Length: 484
Image 1 (cartoon, rainbow, N blue to C red):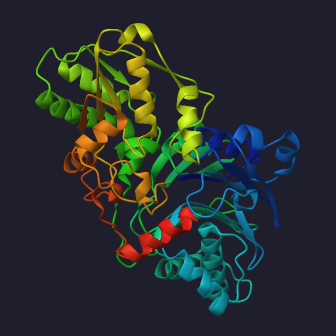
Image 2 (cartoon, one colour; image 1 turned 90 degrees about the vertical axis):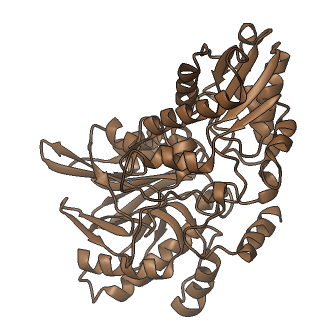
């Protein structure tokens, strides 16, 4: 998962993009980058690390221009090399910088095609560089001479959709021309448009989540539609066109379960409201398993499980307590690479308040159980703090399948629920009881807030891959490359 942002303003955009990336930091902690445009020149600063650590004063001073894009990354394809920090840049045609959120399922075939047919060299293992070169090649074919206009860009993105498979929400910038935003035809990854009526005229912003738009004082206009392309010229004129033949809206349900900030609205659905609703439904499942009086206290795993846990406690009539305190200077353990790093970081990240556990039957609520590392450590912490009984509840169903659309869970052997029954999972994490949300209930809880969302991309839960090109052989190749 990554975060992207793009701004066309009446004044310098370097500080605004920096501020937006800080708000989107939860989407990627591995690397960050900003590219701005001043006339025909692209200014670029990027590196590994958190936003606050990557950019120095000298970097900000060199990021001149009234137009720019930014990116925060955690790796899902490629390596953690600084060369794969985004935005990526290609110098022809015109010069293009691009930031990409998602994952391409046919990146390997495209890379071979780039070399043999398009005569373009891909220098990294990143699928984002592949995507940029597809965009650049198709733009070169669509433009006659130097007559770059929105129509040529729309033609380019239409051809890109025909070649590229997978999930992608992108911001791209062409110096001297403008900003481009586009979303895959299935609408798997989010992209939101915002505007600001400044003293010198209208300004525009694209971002992965509405919270970034809110934080900068912009007004949320709408979500970019699946398959749609948005062009904002350097003069701040805006153009839209649907560039996919058969677009359909299938937002990733894991955005609502875990990744997105609760104060974001994605495809017309409040992330916070959807988590509250999941807590209500989870309460019904817990009530079936435990008669009144068997649970003394409900506790969330901070932060993303709080809304579900709070609503669950209210529905059950059980006291809600904060039993775990989070160290906010340790990153999200799900995003951290390497099992040992994740395991060690759990104890650094969370500490139990012993008095809340001692002698009690405790219901611990988390947003999901992926690898089980965090869950196992948390159950152990509860027992060490004196809990009489530990019940673990997940607001999401078991994660049983790899995700190939931009979430870092491509290896089945890493998933605690793969080929395990619920009771086997319970024993693996050391809990006395385990309660899961049902897949159908989770989908209903999220989609109930927007009638236009008829389907959610939930492949890591149900094994159904919306793009139709994910085969068992592909999953085997992904796992082999990851293990090697």
